[in-house]
Length: 111
Image 1 (cartoon, rainbow, N blue to C red):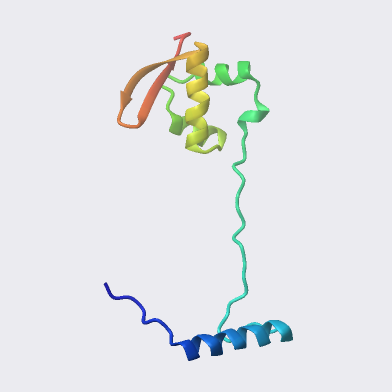
Image 2: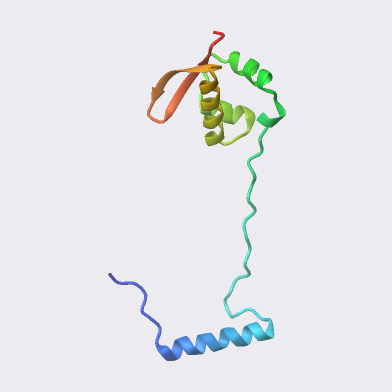
């Protein structure tokens, strides 16, 4: 349904020859932008600095524990926070209190 018109054979050949000559000369083709890759930020994890006992001590102070709270407090991605909370639930350190949509609310067992 529409779209750009396909280049003719003569136009394709001409463009290909220009590309080859520019590669040999070491020049960039006209209108070409230099390739740059965006800097990717690695998810810095402040949780790795804490031991499990310190993490549980911090989480036990909270009335309700959500992945967003853990992610914002420890500067990690929400997906990582969800994984951490799920692992802690399987170990029996916390339990899920409520679930609504994609959000889970946990509580520590000490409260």
